[in-house]
Image 1: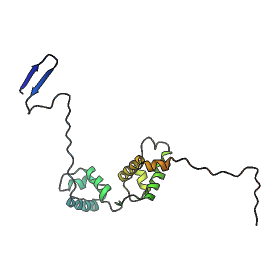
Image 2 (image 1 turned 180 degrees about the vertical axis):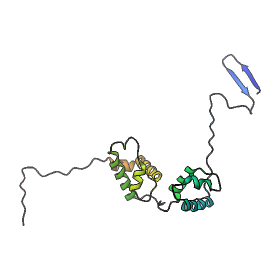
Image 3 (image 1 turned 90 degrees about the vertical axis):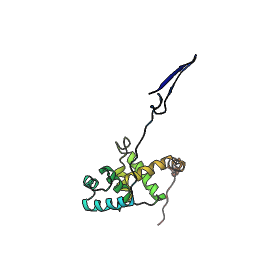
Image 4 (image 1 turned 30 degrees about the horizontal axis):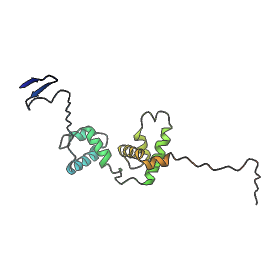
Length: 169
């Protein structure tokens, strides 16, 4: 490695060849993303999931044409290909139901410590736990949702205690 050290009165600089490692103090991370799923792989995964069932992902992964892990196969099936997963946008009624479920379950002991999205997604038919969690986070960040959720509730005034109640038959 060719290194040249030049010194001046105020600082020291290090010049290195372009083939050397990155400069000190700088960290370079490289992530290798898994390859995208192709329609052919989806078709093979669907066929294998029907043959082996939705619990034997190790067997399914072993027979995939491109090398896929059992977790990748399970997640692809559960979040994208399963017939009971809806791929339509969330409606206002869906959002209201999701908010009701999450806020009701927040009151349960232990739920606030770590959300059990699997339990919430079971109550919301046709949505995966990832889709439910993603939508809840989107809702929590939206100003309109927060304003509607934490708007002071109007209280109805009760009639005075000494008011006479008359009924007619």
